Image (cartoon, rainbow, N blue to C red; front, side, top):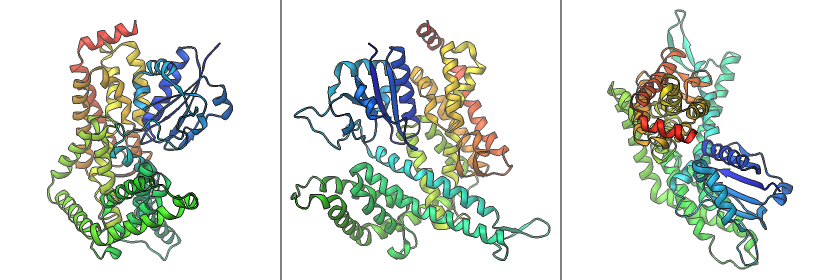
Length: 497
């Protein structure tokens, strides 16, 4: 009788690892002759949802997740939990281990309810919570950024000779009024995105009761008028608020409340008490220092970028190199978060004319270099890659074109030192060129396609961005090809045989 497997995959960002883990489990299960269905909990939400009937029929349930997944629907089924990397690294071994070690969830004497699955104290870190918040914020960043950027084009007023003489919307014309309204829509998005980020970072730590206090606290810490400062606390201020709220609520929930008031604890007591406390902390402890610190940081960053010609190249190279270092890991995410923070904070504070685009532009230029570099290397140096590797490279092409840097992970695992060097150098080149040439990435896809699918202000329309990213890809491919060890190729061919 054919065994039936259902699985749930999820990662902190909800973009790459979620779907890579799902694909790996599906492939491994089919190779074993099992019936399989995998539900993904990605940035877009739940897809391919497992039905109650499919759960009833399943012989085994696997949850491969880096975030909280509610297991209550799997009560009474053999359940095995792990993280997404276990599925990506060796899904076949994972299924075999799960088949042997899975235990019945919810049996008598076991804990049932909203427990944390696939995410324990050893695996959870601040980056997990930050990326959870980022995943909710990204759609608003893209929507607000693109609308604001497109509207901004109509704000540049020209004279009869085509020279830009003024920035501002011509409110006397219907189009000018419409674009002015759209510009304000973009500004609203940028104002809301930071509280949204804070709310879902706190939610990742302590669930729904933490959302409202974190959003309110983050709004206050980013309002200079409320704080009586020149600048708000920005992205860093929102993160501090989110962490304070999240961990406070996490431990506050452990209090044993009388049964009579338990129903109102999550919707009234915890949100009210926490909101009051975080408001006091923001107003009287952290608000003004953070506001002053962020004002100084962004003013300095803008000054050094404008004052020194080489600054964008250097900053871009550093950010780009970080993006290529660990492909979705902490260093990569630090660069991505920093770029997003500088862009959103300076856009909110100074508007489109004063925003600092350098870090975000460099990060997005570099994000596709590693996977596309691998793909190009398999084309140029075919004799140095096995047939299976060349076939697998087609997947890196698809992931690279949509800006998923994790697509290169399988190749890095086979030859880490040489691959990391190639990825870091190529990504650094792409970041340096894009930032140095003065490209401004507002939103879209961080790959060569970004010049068509998104909005990027660049010196030579379409060409500058494609050139910058393509040079980085070529550099990565050449380094991979010239440095690849014959032993790695031999090992790949042996596995294929």
